[in-house]
Image (tube, rainbow, N blue to C red; front, side, top):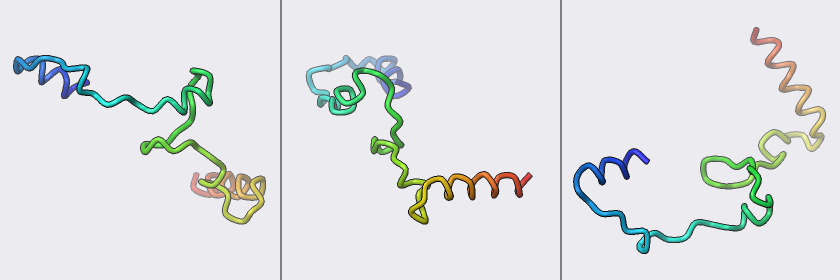
Length: 70
């Protein structure tokens, strides 16, 4: 948005025909609701926090670490 505003201030025209279409898969899967994705657009899964194979144990260990840091 900032770059687009700067381009408009510099006198450039907007060319929407030259813009490639965005991905629609996430909108279809989420029925136009928000989806949890990272900065690359990859959907959030438990793989980010699942280390030992037991999701509950991993979540509890993360909570324990956060308590110890306080």
